[in-house]
Amino acid sequence: MVLSPQGYTLETGSELTDDAERLLIESAVRIPSTGEIDRLYVLGLPDRVRRGELSVITLLKGIEPIGIFCYRSVDLEAELVYGCLKPGNEGLERIFMLQILDELSTQGINAVRSSFSGPGADRFAVAALEMGFRKVSRMSMTRRVDESHTFTYKPEPGLNITPWSTNHFEDICRLMYEASEAFDRAVYPLFASPEGCRTLLLSIMQDRHGIFIPELSLVATIDDRVVGFLLSSLIVDGSVLILDIAVDSQHRGNGIGGKLLESLISKSAMLGRRQIVLAVTLDNEPAIGLYRKMGFKQASIFDQYVLELKERDVSRFP
Image (cartoon, rainbow, N blue to C red; front, side):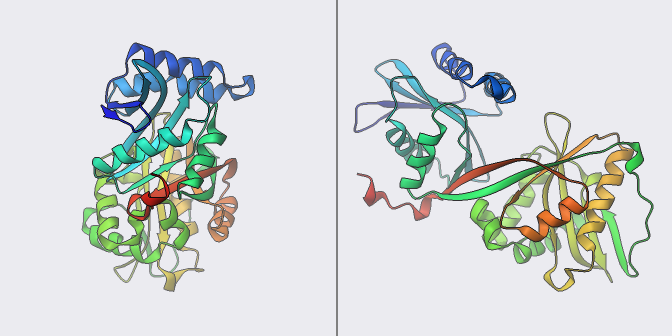
């Protein structure tokens, strides 16, 4: 438990009290009727906490929970999955966020991100921007797959597309770092260093970003040199999630990204996987164009807010 200067207390842990769970459920009730999917998502959060997928941070006034955030931490980066304040406590968003950042800093967290959803999301977003978070606009995309989507194609001369192999680990770490753009690093700071990419790839292999699927993770080589890759995992609803796709800068424009996606779609169809999903930064127009060409459709546009804690200016917020 942490005592804030304003007299509120903060509790963290992997357990959800009955009062805190009621706070989550009451916030789900306040989601508009048009947001049925979002409501079901929030109602499923307590079970995810009980399964150990998520941890919770609770803001208390006395012994009464007045705010809660569910979050998960991977690779010393934390994602604030969902948060809310009890009605009547509007205006405490910045106090709550400041205490969250202080607590996560003590846990060794290097970066925090959130897409802020649900009642009060706009106020949390404003508080985040005031505290130095960067806003990055993102698009989620999806593609349905069935048996008719098995492709038969001949790779370009000299180009080979093969399933994931640990033999390519270091080459993929190198390419993950070298091919990442500024907009990638704005959302996932680990891309900014070779060590960060190594940490990220190891956690992918350890099923910390969904269940890693080696047979649907692909490597493109030319003359035995890795020139592209695609990494996939299986998420809770059974969809295949594209975690990362990259092509060496010297080989872009030659259709390698399309071949990787084509192979993924075909193999997904053969394995009975019926949906592929991904998220892409809106500034990445070439990637969006490729995804659309390969049959992916826009599912939603959302803003992601990211703060590297080492860049946080604590002097602005006494």
